[in-house]
Length: 68
Image (cartoon, one colour):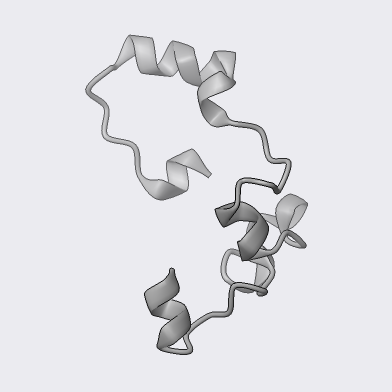
């Protein structure tokens, strides 16, 4: 991400909606808050649904979009 900022392709102060508009619920979060882990978003690894999926198929390869 820092490389993208250096290349002027994004700014850490950008809101998530500028890069992932389909996530309207979290659109106003800044990239900085996501990177600092201060956004308040729940941790998917603490989700019962995700833990069941992990147990059912521990070798499943998750895409970044799957995990958002």
